[in-house]
Image (cartoon, rainbow, N blue to C red; front, side, top):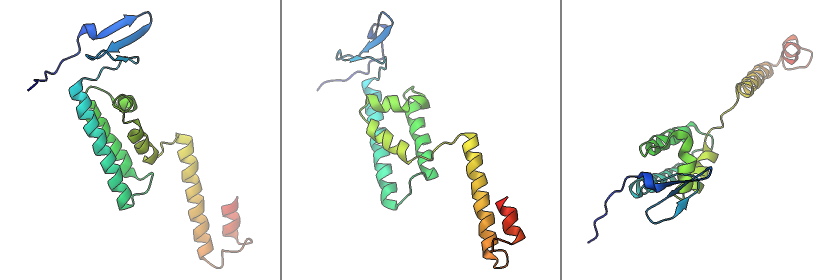
Length: 156
């Protein structure tokens, strides 16, 4: 039986050549981006992304629509799990790439609610209010024609 010993990154694992940072794993494979994921963390991250894939399949089977807020909560949990290995929420895509799960991350990213700029959100809110006001005008037969003061006020 072979005993596996968790090896922490050593200063010799990181080689600096010119301006580029190059990290090598115990097996000698180079990581050009300078990301070093220990074997223990790699296993944990693979399990995390496999669980993510199962959760996305479950929500698809339930009929959860894209852009549902539940996907933002799933991302928050994913970011917390990835943080346990020492990577921040901005590094989730990079970690997914390095453990071979970028497609799973992209799948989640495509389902998440879109984050809008403040001016975009303001325009959408204004449009929703206008549609709601028009629906109220159309609900009343006396106000539904183009010559009514309510419709003229809404239009301007």
